[in-house]
Length: 130
Image (cartoon, rainbow, N blue to C red; front, side, top):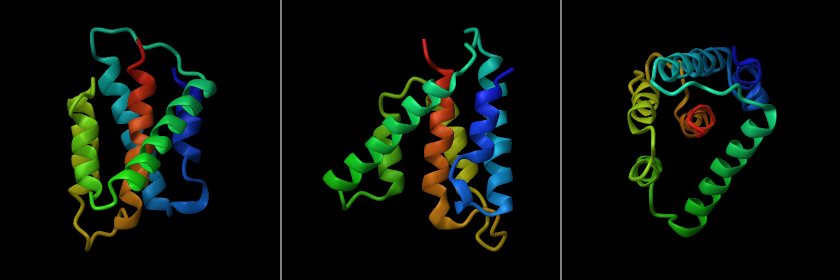
């Protein structure tokens, strides 16, 4: 059971997400958790402090990329992140899930995909701690 992780998925982004986006974030966060729990490594219970630490680190990374590499778009940022990332396949799944939605479906607004990626990456980071 990961109670803090569940609360995080339900509250991340505050009121910035619509109901469909909130549902997507929660659903895919749980999918990531279930995927990673099937691995060979036993998952630790995630604390609120751990979530805050990884989320801050991820937002710091976004600020760095925004300040240092203004010409790089979202997908280029993700490629830089994934180059040395421990859970490449899980993060790739998250990215593909975010990007595959038809804009006509409007489940996830384009301007929210980057933010949702950061929250889901935070989940992966927390679950991947050694």
